Length: 150
Image (cartoon, rainbow, N blue to C red; front, top):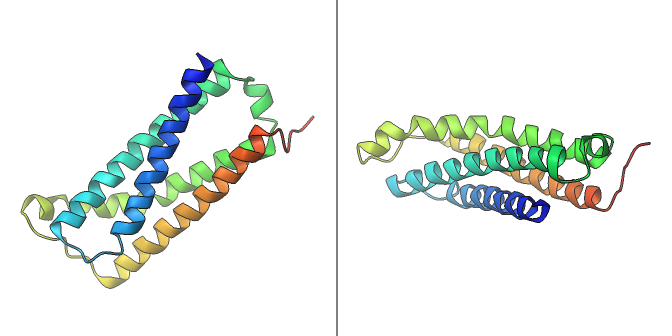
């Protein structure tokens, strides 16, 4: 069962990374109805996969792996949780913006997004990707037992 949950956790994490990469690419394009729809869908996949990563990860910590005492005394694991939370907080701005486009998209129109807002969205998505890269580094360190306290 542990292997199944590890597989599911990794698949959800890869889906999260892929969705964020799609947002990264699409946000650079000229805004159109098609691009806006794709961004909204990528953000939905990002949110769903983040929820799956969190739930499955917590199940692994408490029921299928080394136990909470091991993980919560591991510095890279704690950093990984903090980075995951940071990515979640950072994702609020793009999600709110993308959701605000729904009425325009339903009307078949490209959302009206000013250059400053687009620049802020790009910077936010860049920051999310940077945090994700650090999170992956923490996962590798954690898996090798680096930073274990006590």
